[in-house]
Amino acid sequence: MSTSEVVAAILPSVIDLRRAIHSHPELAHAESNTTALISTFLTQQGLSPELRKATGLTVMVGSGERLVGFRADLDALPIQEPDGLEFRSQVPGVMHACGHDIHASVAAGMAVAASRTELPGRIRFIFQPAEETFPGGAEDLVAEGMAEGLEAIVAFHVDPTLEPGRIGFRSGPITASADRLVIKLEGPGGHTARPHRSVDLVYATGKVITDLPAILDRTIDARLPAALVFGRVTSGSAFNVIPTSAEIAGTFRTLDHGLWAEAPVLIDRLLQEIVAPTGAKAFLDYQRGIPPVVNDEHVVAVLREAVGVALGVEAVAPTPTSMGGEDFANFTEKVPGALLRLGGQPSGLAADLHSASFRVDERAIETGIKGGLAGLVGLLQHGHQ
Image 1 (cartoon, rainbow, N blue to C red):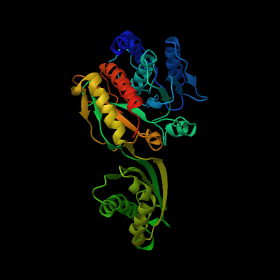
Image 2: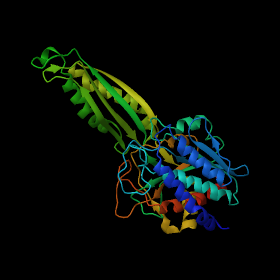
Image 3: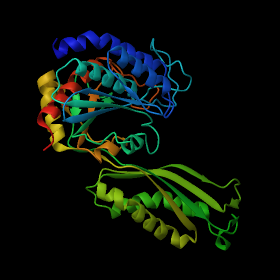
Image 4: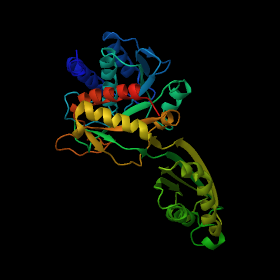
């Protein structure tokens, strides 16, 4: 059987798997049923998956010395899914609103199709839990050795703005780093009638909120995309009391490795300079998350050529960078790799990732299996130079 015939034969069962995963979403580190669904599917198709002690699993397909990998994530989000799908979430307050159910089912379908294809090497399919957590489940898998021995690694992420049947490619940075920071400000407190006898902590907090991102923008190279954005501010409990403490929390993101490494020291220096005239004391708790995902140029070139041959040149699309984070970066820090965008734009809908209205056109599954497998075979044939 040809690859197209193999994919056509298994596609209905892969779609059923996707709908089962979608109907029973699980949050990060709790993907036990999702793991069992995928393991059962693979076992019934004649494969031998290996379960982790926690959630997630891997399966190896093929033979030979050469080895490439494919990573799919499993976890859902704490979002209530509205009515509309016959296979909508049956778990209150939990929903697959980022396409991980598509990624997992595509990877399972690729593994089965690969097992029925003569491969020029081996493919390790990695089903990863907890991509949506901070810092992310990929860190644990890399520590367990899942990147060892790989010549290259690939992952998909669905794109609700890209047409079904197309796959998006980009060399270089494709997603940003994602770090968290918490800034604590302290002062003696006092009466709002006499700020001159105290430290106006709310004023100092406002200075940090407005000045820190602005001064940072003027301090770093304008050619290096970066974003410092605050999402939480807390301080005080009464209208006529100057508080003794305040807290600001947010994220810092960049596409540049050098700036990512420099950020904690740079941000703390600017913070101290901003608050010094106010008299407040400032403390920065900078929490490293994940680095940028940087797509390897050669890997992308091989994948683009292979997908163009398998699906037609019209299936190959450019894709922009995103300031969102992806813990696939933990793999690409160790192994040349590429994160590709899988077109899944539903007709008449334009809901973004992490939205309760998020939908994916299931035609993306067939495209993902055919294009992904063609790309992995291409990597095994050409290798990394």
